[in-house]
Image 1 (spheres, one colour):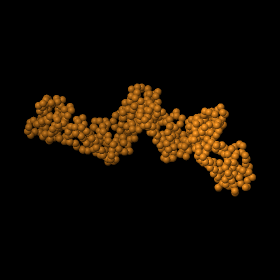
Image 2 (cartoon, rainbow, N blue to C red; image 1 turned 120 degrees about the vertical axis):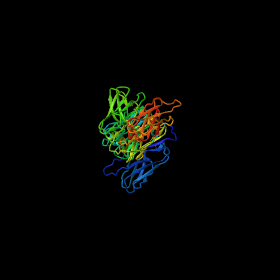
Image 3 (cartoon, rainbow, N blue to C red; image 1 turned 135 degrees about the vertical axis):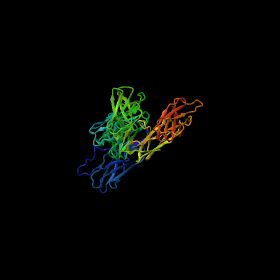
Image 4 (cartoon, one colour; image 1 turned 90 degrees about the vertical axis):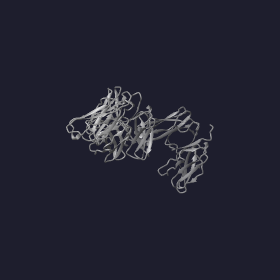
Length: 601
């Protein structure tokens, strides 16, 4: 066989068990030991150093033999060790080596076991190796490694972590061999590969692919995995799975159910790692678990964690509707329900925390609607929630999640905040309005709510003890009374009692200005009746007949009269005039879209 210049050398040392020339007696000194530097692989035309170690005897000599022939001149050992350098290694160096020593006190030489030098031939087909069963192995199980190759073969070698572990001869017509481990122990864990010896001695193949043998140690505490029990993701989204153990300096493994071996492994000096799966698709769905090992024994692993499901949303399942019953801010110790409705029946419904998509509840129904109950509410029950559903025949695909619904719980122990300004002037149409809410403690959120609304319509994250709400481009729809509240950093969805009210009133400078007068136009006698007419002088016929006039005394805005006009005039009667009717009067004209305020005496 013609060799190329890039051929490399593999040295394998074999302990000679049979055919030893020198059987020792109890009085005989021990045989020397033989080893190689580098340990196992040397390039063609490289150098190899064979090391002999022998007992310390006065005037002893060490020498190296190849194929039972004295190869190198005897060398005196230094502290019991001799080094034999082979330079420019070539095919002629193939064969069996041993080292021997003698001294003046010995009647015969003592020799080491055998070291076989084989030459790696890159033209030989690589062998294949397989492990059965290919999974995490429990103690006491039997495992087998099958090594196979094509071509005339003399024998196979099994290697663990780069070192030769075992060898088997085969017949010339055989192309595979089985290496078996019965009663597997922790020490059997590791990386394995095989090679084979060609019938053209002394050539050997390149190494096969590697297989990994993980051994489960039942004494290791189980790790924890999160999110648990389910992780919901949208197509193309990114996934983070956290695995945690009690000890530090660990290697963690993430494995999908059905896969023979872990998908990912990460090392850490701490107790926790985060596995990332990017650009999620349906191929990523399934059940996942994690294990760990110590860094010193990476192939001795713990039992697996609990299983968590990775579920992906699919567009053919429309998102459900969600609502809070009863709607509004809930009282402590009360009972509420979150309703989730789909457009199909026979589904599994899931309730999640909106931000993390952590699964909170599951309900299976033959119908199309479920209720998720929250009984005897506490401050910690508040939050933002969404729901989804799955067909009962599909385990890892889900509908899109619903819109979010927020559950706020009233915490009456929190001091109510202040709202500023306490009294607000009339606001011109399309102006911006600022309302500030202030509390005594550091807040998580501030909430702004209209008087008749059941829930806040604005929420701000807090940056201290106050926040300012902005109502932009104000219209008549923004008129009304407003109050604010806040939540603490400990319970961001448990809100305080509300502040006092502040009233917002909008004026429209584009409306025609009405006029106001008294009838009679004299001093009013107590007990008499008067009429206050209000008129819009509309020369361009733009006055809206569905408008309303409002009359009230400044400072007594709650005591308001409302009158529909007759054409362009409204008449406000005051019967049995009293001292309380005296004062400054304000007139407000409101159309279906705008408001104008006029003051008169």
